[in-house]
Length: 428
Image (tube, rainbow, N blue to C red; front, side, top):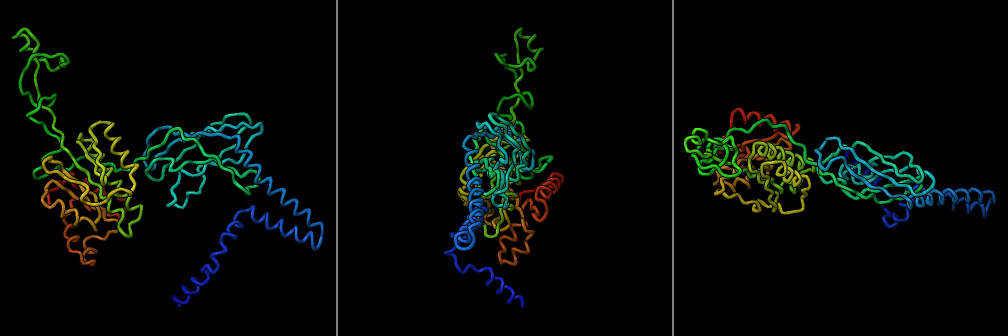
């Protein structure tokens, strides 16, 4: 019975005349029905009753006004768009400002802002971002509205346009909007609280380096005062003894270098949804932001691109901007990212269960590599065994952090991260 219903549904939805589509699609527009009605009224007026010619003329007049009015209105309209800040985060509220100038003496109605604010994948790419009220004649009107970016990226996603179908909505005329400044939307991140203790050869993220001179750590010696030294470092007893300014030299802080590798090849796996790949990016951004907040030199690896986020606000912006604008068009092979063991960099590989074994083979001799696995579908080791891939199964068991993607990945990451902060992790 089910097979018969499927065959009937396939028969009813089959396109038997694809060659005629280009002649039929124009009927989907309201003006097409007006043209069809005018043609029918013309035939009736000529062959049956001349009174139908009045209906034909009325339909033609309405169609002409519905097409000509929006086109004439948009010829004297110019507009510009800007945001209240250059950067935001997914889900945060941003105020959008658009200024519309009307050079006609009469007011304009029915203006809409289209394109550039919604993703085609969400099925809302044709949804208007905003509908504008009346714009008076010979004036410049400023409109503001709140926009909540649904996804990371550079907004507007494409050149927005101002459209109107006033007065009848039969035809729309558009004009491109000048974008004064763009908005970079960072991926949403988890609120991580600390850095888990690292056992083994990598003892800490930051420590005092005894072979370099700085302003932190223990006192390593004394030296004469040099221009630019802080008075807080003056050793007053030695200064009084030698009758000249003497300062204390201290150890310099040695920041741990962290390499954060985003497995860009996971995005091209069969069956992977765009939301699952976005969750991977959010996990990468959360871990990178946490290490950066602890003053670690964080190096982000995005395929064939390396981004070094030095401590400070500019370093964080550089890393988050790279994640915000990344697209899956570059290289995605594991061999692209090289982890140099001589740098003693602690490497974090954010990947999926299907590719964790491949990454482990690459870093099998490196004890400073940790694996963060996003199990998007809750497959776990059992699914790897079912697919007859024992390497995936054993690698997934040895991963330092496995995130259950069946719930909110950021909530799962926060919970597992807190557990690691309490228990620590050891090198696998």
